[in-house]
Every structure is written in structure tokens, then in C-alpha cells.
Length: 269
Length: 218
Image (tube, rainbow over all chains, first blue to last red; front, side, top):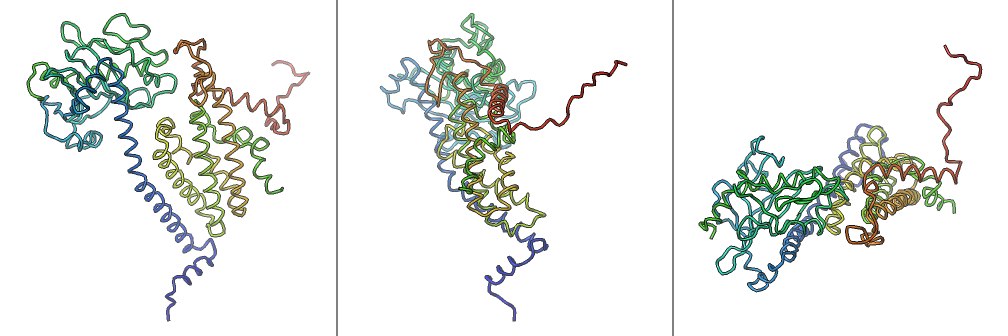
């Protein structure tokens, strides 16, 4: 008669000498099983909290950027928060799509080969490798007139991927503000791009000269024209990454078609 | 009283960082501000105490051939849980600690205590020993973090102490303090200070330089 009581099996297992093969394998399985259970339940239970934190962080930064721009907080207050519309645009055609921005997951879209494309290496100045074909942008209109466009930009910096929002005024050439959303640069050096004092240098800068070439860049030392922004000492590569982000995302593989459509006033209604 | 020895001996006399020189990597990386140093210390203490207690509780049933793998599996699981907790409840700080909480796994201190102490001692003693070592590690991190944040940014726990020139004050932050080498310098000075006060900690030299008075140059 075989012993079917699991407690007896357990006692027998524990009584085995530590060096026996059965006990070695059993202990390996038991410990890894319990650990796997612990890790996966923590991951599943804490995931909603973590996602909520990430979303709150992004929204807080967008709101903070809007509030820091003179005159815009009034417009948003006057027309309500709905006056800032979010649309998902197709970067290939520059047209708006009818995808609901609330359900569009930019991070997942950038990794899925179906919804993203590889950036040719000679054009990949921002070091991103690939980018999503669609991107969410924010547009603010007042009395049917374009007042503000907010574009998400990103680039690989010194030791992290930097993500930012670049806000352009209605003429689509004057910078209304730059807000860093995510960065992991050296604290005290590159990470100073997060400081309000540095981001305050951006409003009023101009993107492109007469010929339409994007000229805006972060320079070493002091800025000398409307196309230059002061660099941060000891953070040359972080500054270069921001420059690359602007040049890439306003260029051929970025939002140039979208901006052209916005300038002509067609589409994106 | 003998039991409490395990708690306070690692604070100065047998400090894991300054005497055994363990856990240096994270001590360099997270001490640019007091807040990150404190959260990192708390995470390490939690992981160290929990892993020591678990390993001590099952020590009679750990086959010696796979003991290191079992210890690392337990430690790694606890580290992932600690990391997820910080991301869920202290999101801002988790952004600044980046990967260093995850790297507690590779901190020699944790595996060292598991292997050297928890494998041979009962649960209560192991917990005391882990707590003492965790506190010793945290103490060093906080001392270095204090100096680096105060002189590197003029703040403590993010509160301005010396108003910096960027904000219109008089204090010019020492950028060196925020770079990894300064942590090496500070750690070296700290070890020097401790060993001057406690000469018993000075290790004998491995090799003496011999000077032969009558030796002639070739």
C-alpha cells in the first residue's frame, strides 16, 4: 500500500541527507517556484500603481509646461482644458488619423515592427534606431486660429534616452517652450536640463532661418543669436542630444510633413 | 548583551564598507544626494534582513552543491520586489536611483552575509547581524551623501542650505563632488580617519619594501 499522505512525503524529503540528488533537485524546484510566485504576484499587484505614476508624471509635466508659458495658461483657462486637443498623426503622410489618442500606446508602437520603421543610419542623428509611424501631438486653437503645437521629441543622450515636449507658437517657427519629460543623465551635469532655469532659455528662440533650414541648436558656452541656446558646462553630449532631437524630429523622418500641412491650414482639422 | 554585539559591531568596528570594502559600486553611484542614499540604504537593509532570515530558516536543508544558486535566487527575487515597491510608492526617487536598486543583487555585502553568517546561525542572530551590516552600509552612504550633496549642490535632502549662484546666491557648487571620483576620495579619507582612531583595523602590509644598506647598484 503506497503512502499517499503528502505530509509524510514532505517529512521524508526533509529527512533525506542534504547531498542526495533527489533533495538537491527538489530544493532547487521548491525555492525557484516560491521565488517565481513572489516576483510575479508583486509585479501583477503593483503594476496598476506603477502605470498610474507614469501617466501622472507625463501629465504633470505637460501641465507644468503650459503653465510656464506666458499667456497660455489664460487661454487654457478661458476655453477649458478641452481646447488643447490631442491628435495622432501619421508621420509618413503628415495627415491626422482617427485613432483615439487615449488608447494609443506610443512606447508599444515604437517597438512593434508592424507599427514602426527603421531609421536609415545616415539619417538617424538622434541615435534612436527605429521610430513609431504614428505620433500623438497636441494642438491649441483660439477662434479657429492655430496658437500652439506641442510635439514629442526624443534622442539618445550621454547615458539615457531623453524625451521632451517641444512647443511651437502659431507661426510654427518660434519656440514657445521645451519641457523634458524623461531623462537619466548625470546628476548635476546633464540632468540639469530638467532645471526650470535652463528650460526658461527656450521660449522665443527660432527654429529655422529664411531658407527654411532648421538652425536651432544647443551651443557650447553662451548663445549669440535667436537660433542658439546656452549649453551646460560639462554636459556637451546631453546638449548635442537635444540639438539632434530637434533636427531629427523636425526633419524628414519626423514632423516636417505634419508641419507643412499645418502651415497650409489643410487637414488636421 | 552578546547578541547585541552582532548589531553594533558592524557599525564602525567591522563596517562592511570601510573595513571589508564591500558594496563600493553602489556607494559611489547613489550618494550624489541624501534622499537617494537614504532610500538605497533602506532598500538594502530590507533585502539583507529578509534574505538572511529566509536563508537562515532553511539552512539545514540547503544542499551545499547548489547553495550559492539558492542564495542568489532568493536575494534576486527580494530585490525585484523591493524595486517594484519603490517604483509603486516612491516613483520620483525610483527615477533617480535608476538601475542601482536592481544592482543590490550584485552587492557582495548581501551574498557575503548570507554565505558567511546566515548559513551557520539561527534566524534571530542572522536578522541582527543583517540589520547591523545594513545600518553600517547606510551610515557610510549617508556620510558620503551628506558631503557630496552639501558641497556639490548646496542642498540637503533637496532643501537649500547654501544658496547657489544659479539661484542668485553666493555658493559655487563643486561639480567634482557630483562625479564618481569624489566618492572614492571621500571614502578613502573616511577609511583613513577611522583607521587613525582605531589602529587595530590597519591591515598588515602584504609585502615590505626591503632596503639593504650595503646593496650596490649594478
